Image (cartoon, rainbow, N blue to C red; front, side, top):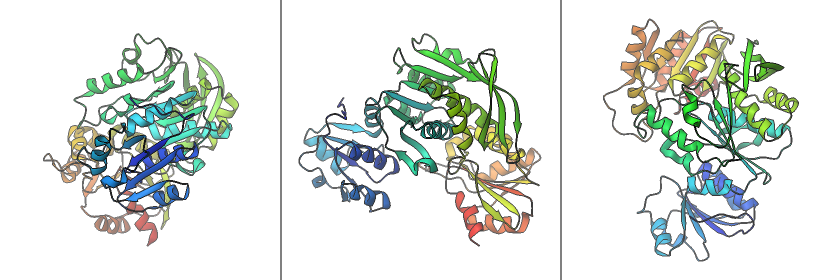
Length: 460
């Protein structure tokens, strides 16, 4: 495989340079003195930013974009072998790397690389670690799956000591990485359009842990069922964190919630209380996310005092229990939750947030996920006082698998929760204006474009 060396800058070409992840990787290379070219379908703010920083960007993907002097070509999963640039690069014998492989190569240029993995909680925990490192002036390079205010986006180019990244298990892309520190937050059934079952997912996470060097560190949630199986036989350091002080290096006790559902808890290390921690984000799930962030920050030499300051100043990532505003006394929150366990965590958080009734406007994400976790979705959503379901967001899928939001609404209603299916955002917005009253908490929820409902209401 072709190796990227920061000490030997060369010419890298990106097919699909305008994407949020690819543009970020291109930005890192530009900062390191590389020659960068790339192509995308249309001009955008990201491509214009790259051009201002010295990249050569072609609009439209054509064979002639593979110009003389290119040393390696990077492509996204959306690029297929019949792409004209792909074929031209192949014909010229230019080395080619997938985005995941390229990201793995970038990681090898840093002294410490922290990869945050898990079925959910990755973006928040990556952001928590980033906030801690930023507040401690550790100058990290960061790539995260959400927009984070402290770094002004989803990418930050810092020094060559620390690299922090969100590591997704989908299509096993995280097996292309070279971390020195791994965090595994949870392992649940998800992405069943790719994985066979939960055992298949667990096996992938097991393979992920094998990427760690002997002097590396695995931070793992000890509440994962039979978590020892995931780290059995590893030669690296293993740091369990979780709810049980008997089997966790870091654990939390005596958790209380403030007026906006942000937690304060006693931090235990090897069963002994060492301090009290207050978070700047709401929810019990973030207590456990913060334990993983604490362990990671400790591994790279950040003091507990600086860790506590970072956790308190971290106020959240966009689309993670993000307050969008108020309308006629109704508080509107938006959240990215699209898996039953994430929904449960978000609605549990809502219970500790000021409210009269909780309204959840949920947009299921993909037919595969909705069908495979149908009962779990219904059970989790039934925690709200009222549920409004939008049409399923198909994403990459075309087969409905015989499943629909109407069916999910009927199942939720059968559990005793007020539930409605309204196919269009216009209908949903009109219904909300008629039904929600002063003091209610409205949560738009899902990984698609359901956020527009709250934003449209607030613009009226």
